Amino acid sequence: MKSYTSLAEIMPQLQDGTTTCVELVKYYLKNIEAKSHLNAFLEVYEEDALKKAREVDQKIKVGTAGKLAGMVIGIKDVLSYEGKKLQAGSQILNGFEAQYNGTAVQRLLEADAIIIGRQNCDEFAMGSSNENSSFGPVLNAIDEGRVPGGSSGGSAVAVQADMCLAALGTDTGGSVRQPAAFCGIIGLKPTYSRISRFGLLAYASSFDTIGIFTKNMEDNAVILEVIAGSDAYDSTVSLEPVPEFSKKLNFAGKVKIGYIKETLENEGLNEEIKEATLKKISFLKEEGHTVEAVDFPLLDFILPTYYILTTAEASSNLSRFDGVKYGFRSFNVQNLETMYKKTRSEGFGEEVKRRIMLGTFILSASYYDAYYTKAQKVRRLIREKTYELLSQYDFIILPTTPTTAFRLGEHSSNPLEMYLADLFTVQASVAGTPAISIPNGTDKAGLPIGLQIMANDFQEENLFAFSNYLLNSNRTN
Amino acid sequence: MQIDKETIKKIAHLARLDFEEKEEKNMRKSMSDTLTWVEKLNEIDTTTVKPLIHMSHEINVLREDIAEEPLDHNRGLKNAPAKDADYFRVPKVLE
Image 1 (cartoon, rainbow over the protein chains, first blue to last red):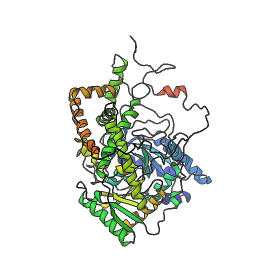
Image 2: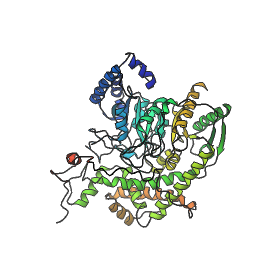
Image 3: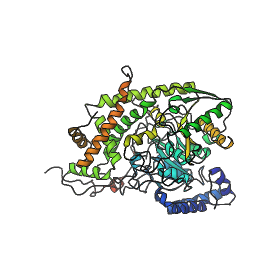
């Protein structure tokens, strides 16, 4: 069977009988098997996927198939799918079985997507290389000695290596965009609150967003229009109407684009990524768009703000894992307090413990104002300044990452070094604005480079159209 | 900010975590390094800035107050490491 890169390619073939959903699923199952050493999947739902495929094939015949018929999709191990194991790449949720469908998962199924499996990730989505998974690292299919990025590394590699057509990850500080850049695919983080978080294991609730990995813009857009929008189970989700993004991908006219000077002048930025970004800037100028350098002097303050707030929120969110209600419990204990401590100490990995400890410290009575309140204030400044830029410019462009995919183990001894991998992605996370990473060529070693495009809140429609135009320009220049 | 031995013990207790000696030493170092790094925020004057607390733009999303049973008893208990017919079981709390 040939390899497909878009639903648009698959759908007519399903309609005219050239292929079937069952054949598609079998094709992906075979690929998953052949590439199992990449460690992208924690569990493959062979039986369920084939069953759903037969159902969808039947629906296609009678003309009642949903919008995502033919879409074989994987989900990160933080999304709740009823009756399936769910453990956020952690031992503390060993044996846990989801009791309901999260909203995004439910909507995928209702639109006739076929969910093929649960994908590896950094434990509780904390990491930038997928090396923090208790199930071992995921390997980048382009160079197996390199990381795929994180935390949604399994989902990115699954799409990159043709083990499914699309995947849902989550993005708290760059966990969809950064692995998308490292793996040479598209990764979207929509506006905060665009997609319901019901059924998403919480890491940092004021940042967490579900994100989408695909190989082309139309698939990304159609998945967002299916899963986004109001939801009775999440009172923070946006009530903004959800346009049919996938039908509005044609970009026309001239726009105003800003690029952040501090990102291109950053000493950590790889020279080839800088060149690739500058090349895109020249292209846009040649095309008659207004492209201007802008200042964002707060750049170096974004990561510290992010780490104060996310560790604080994580320490609170992860307090529910106490060995009482679900998952792993250490049984070799005398009393309740030791049970809590042993369970948590044995069940959580090192990075998760570090963030719980930092968050607990930051929220402790003596330091709350100095760290937590301070970071909430700086967050306001970062958001206001980002809004200000996005009121002057239609889009902000910047590199997705300072480097291309690094080697396994390269940054694992120093947490601070690892945190810098998210230097350019955290702005949209701290501000809550939507951002997407698209492929922007490769470096001399053949490793993918990502370009990030940011737009104002709820401007996904324009973001998709403009990014699609930029993506198509890759082929022509 | 340097985290001393006493502080790390206190925070570990609050977080219901236990560390062995070597682990505790590594944790102290990485926490101290990270806290020193985030103190960069003190370079910014925020005296007149209000903390940003809510990221969602929605305000008071309400629904009719209709009682529902989202998860039945058995399924609620299903994932418990120790339970009886009605309750989660934990080690003895009172001697």
